[in-house]
Image 1: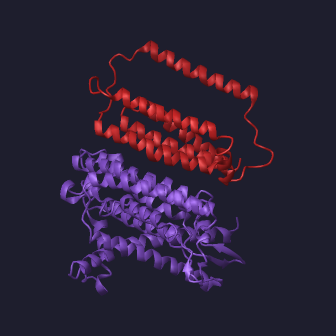
Image 2: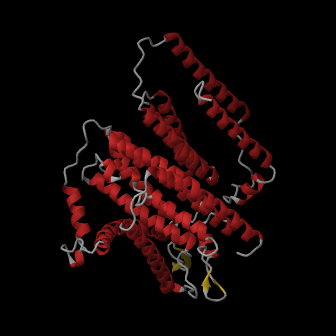
Image 3: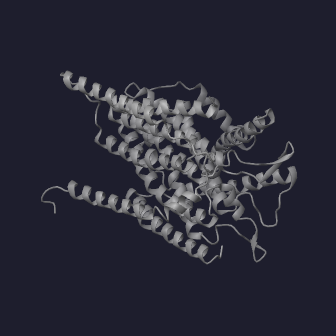
Length: 346
Length: 168
């Protein structure tokens, strides 16, 4: 590999990581201002214009807090747990194509970290590891509330992973590939000249199952039972008093949310494509990234919107929805897509 | 020695090391965690052997699902660290050590006599999943389905065995 190749690789990997981490900060602001909007109050509006510098102030605060490890905790695992959570959140993005292509050094460079043949499986493998961060935090804290949070989380994530992967299998079936660039390519173009060929339309049930499952996988309301503050103090991160380690869990949640939104956009909302948009040259490449970011931001806003609108599920309701509603629906969707593919309708 | 060979050897050593940790560690939760790390190293080996699909499945099924369930049960039962036994059973310990050495020697001898399998002359297989899927749904269909029935039988068997006497 030449120096230019290395440089391109570093940029293709580095830019999304930087973007994800900044998005995490920005999202904490959006979340609090969004909560304010929905609850008819201002939200944080003092630090900087419209309170935009609040995340920065929070970050500085986190860095200067005393770092406490409880004496009864398992020291090694207690420190490792937030690192696992943030690691699995950040690395998942590597195979998501976040733009069309850019002409660099005389050739078209696809805008994706690594275009591997098992793209979607790689994502599922890493998200299935993210549960270790939460479970280990719960167990190593040596606290009953933390342990309950960790146990709830592992049961919840395993249950919803099944529905999520089965729903995504419909997309794989339609595209005939695990490669996310192939899945995006399938969704370019239109039906009847104006309806975008997004997977959302033929696989509406699959989309709903997948989208609901991402809420459960990221432990967001209404599936935030692992940290249910009314029952479990703060769940798995009860013992992580507000030091940088807590901030890592906090960032991991927002990064996970961003990756889940990006994945939803890629699988069901056409990725960076838009009807009538044929990216060309540098401007087209940058525009495709902007379109992708705009779609992802919309889904992220839905995450915030839902959080401040819906109450939390009870544990039995959570399990019933996962196993008795979402999983059969995902299987029915798979059958439906198989029929569509056999009849060559998509 | 190429870079990928170096990474492969490191991952293999890593896998064996953490498998050993899994056996010798006295804390059940940490044993499971060592096994997770070991499986991860194994997945890296699979990737370098041009089998990314197997690697992903290895992580999703074993590290991501089965071992999480192990961890779930261990945490629920809250098994403490095993105490070191007062009687270290010197004879058994010696015999097990000897058995490991004999097995390692046999393995090495076999490898020396027959050599490691040669890489196919046609170069590395394509990383595509389609050929694998095709063979899984044609020539491999019967064994695959038979295996799933076997797993179902094991599941039902476990359920029956776990039932208390008189509960039926």
